[in-house]
Every structure is written in C-alpha cells, then in structure tokens.
Image 1 (tube, rainbow, N blue to C red):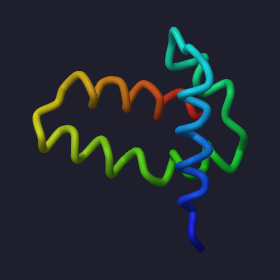
Image 2: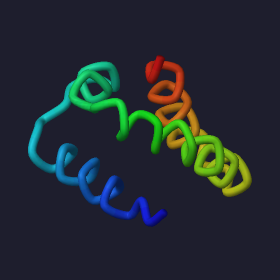
Image 3: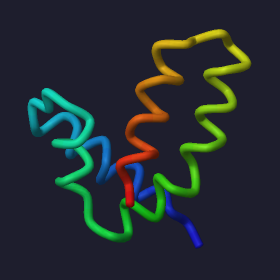
Image 4: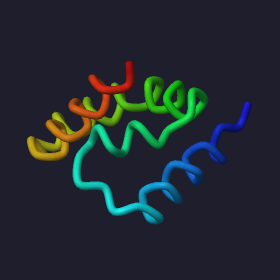
Length: 68
C-alpha cells in the first residue's frame, strides 16, 4: 500500500500551523498519521544518529514518545 499521501498530509499540517511544541503538533494528527509516523520515525532517528545530527534526533525522539 502506498502511504505517500500520509507524508503529504503531515507535511501540509506542518506548513498550515505554527507549532510551538512537539506535543501541539502530535495533537493535530489522526490515528492513521500517527501509525505512519510510528512506522517511519525509528528509521529516521537511526539516520539522524548515524549523521551525527543530535538536535534532529532529539526532536524526532520527542515526537515519537508523544505518539501514544
């Protein structure tokens, strides 16, 4: 199943709202979007860690922890 529409939906949410916290972002997501992020965030966190991008890793980890 192609889930690229979910990525576009999430991107649209990010562009539409001015989020001041990661939790305010997560609160705007529906269950399908949360499941999508739950699937891809571990891979993205691993990539950020491999790249030495500690700030991005920390931000992604915070969002991941807030999903549930």
